[in-house]
Amino acid sequence: MNGLTAQAGAAAPTVRLRIRSGREPNGGMAKNATLLRSAVVTLDSGRGTGSGFFIGREGYLLTNQHVVRDAKFLKVKLATGRELVGEVLQTNTRRDVALVKTESAGAEPLAIRATEPNIGEDVYAIGSPYGERFSGTLTRGVLSGHRTLDTLRFLQSDVAVLPGNSGGPLLDADGRVVGIAVRALDAGRANLNLFIPIQEALDVLAVDIIP
Picture 1 (spheres, rainbow, N blue to C red):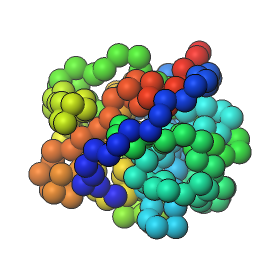
Picture 2: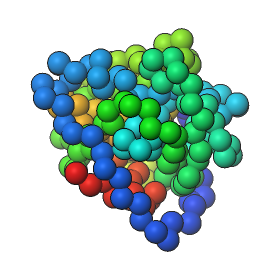
Picture 3: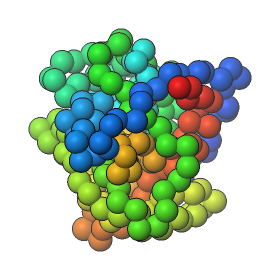
């Protein structure tokens, strides 16, 4: 799913949620691609599919609001092929992010980077372009820029993403999440793709990551 426009924002939650996330993997992307891919799931709202990723061992997932749409529950398909039911806990339509809770799946959650990447850094996208048939697809690019569109901030990268990548993580070379895939301009053919900065996503969902 791609090609969004900004929508009206949801009210901020009144209580902040503290989530214990994963640790930065030793050896980064080069040695941990399989482990990191296992934290990324395919989501099916019944009206389309997208991607999501675990940020906590208790089954907390992040994705886009346009992936979950107006669903309260959705299917969560793990990298192993196992299917779970996810409950949508919180969304913010303007920032296009959603927090989903499912049962603990045993997958190691992804680590979160506290600072934004610099232009020129290597970045990696993981997701399910065109659905679960291509789940776990890993692509590599560079951080191309920091953009502000309609007052919203984005990370720009030439890393390849396609419909279905929406909601998947953008990782740095150390395997830490820096962004969430949200928009592939011209279905990715222009290599001009946008990602939501991860700290902004967590903030609007009132999520605090703790070690």
